[in-house]
Image (cartoon, rainbow, N blue to C red):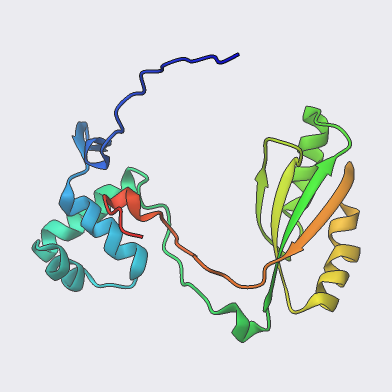
Length: 185
């Protein structure tokens, strides 16, 4: 038996059509705004003068746009990308966790404690068979054993923990390039 169906999918929204607010006025991100954001994702320390030259604006206009992007939440923070191997953190572990219950109380209890784990750098609530995926940074396998024993095994309501060790990082982007209208791979 073969079943067929057709669906009308909405056309993809162009990033240039994303609304943003400058004061009381609603505007759309234009190519200049996207260029500012793209440049800041690769060089957050760029001066207004450097950004203005790259984007093709005056320093004053650039500063005004950058402030509007910050005020409207497009830019949430500026960070330094550290080489964590310089700190001895050479092992990335993806830890999948299933809780014994998915009750609101169990989720809240787990989340309240996982934020206290110093070796956990990211935590995602998931759909599917695992309730959470954690990204853990460790010095080596022995260090991960310590982290497992002193941090992860003490988390509340955990039924199962499965760990996978990353062999090598292939892609690490702060933002997918499609956000800026680039489709290159």
